[in-house]
Image (tube, rainbow, N blue to C red):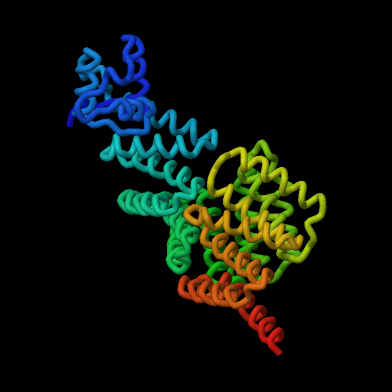
Length: 416
């Protein structure tokens, strides 16, 4: 294998544009058989991959050697990783994912440490984008890398991430199995405290989703014992959030809300704007589900969080915002608006988590029932409840079957 490669995108496009402009040429001047001006434009924008054959044509049209479009593999990889990490730190997940994917294609046979760094960082970007299928594929690749390395710490990270991904995809039983594996590896003394903490969080979440809320809640003291002064503020907030969710699922509303409030109070916006905003959305959602009115204070939490998440431009958060706004509209009696917002959220079902998607379907059915379409709502809810049963999502299926029972009772009463 050569030590040089074609410069990867978007850098190839940048170099092509610079060379063309230096020569006073138009994009149409570079066109050739099978290479249109619009194709050249896409190459320059970085949105079109380039083959060696295309690069040879462009080099010939520009009057330069093909080596002008080549670079050392190490230099290319270093630049890709540098740009990718910068984008990831700035929460520009689209750019980060594109750069990490290019790096993975550019260096498929790199040492394990480099391959792990690329793929692990890529899964973070993909998870935030809601690209669940791609996330699962690369997370499975991380499991293979960790197994090859036979490293308990890497195995914990890989299986924890796989559990979280599968849970988002709706593969609840498989998510639980992956969390159990992560938890077993996390007992190894060589595993870092942060990774051990995340493994327990994943197990608690999986157990709650499979209807074992009491068991999940019993793990909360162990989870909280893992927190100390060295725990980063965003991770501490996420751990308290996981503990709160377990308590709430087990019916301990007061304890759960106190933990969630503590998570929100202990995290500054500057620590992690996205987690800060998501925590406030969770507070709004859980207070609403507990039957508390959306007063001006709660509405201000929503507005602050919405501003941060909409500014991020990340599709998964746009869908979550539409869903929560639909819930608030439904509670306020704005049924048509609730239906429209729920439909908007479900239109992004490819990025919505399995849990949020299921609850958005429940809300849409309730809106249909309120609008006089009870038979349709009842049919939709039954179908959803059966799908949730099949997915082992017992906590969610219980919610759906409860709505089926309530709606069937109301339908029966109206017919007598």
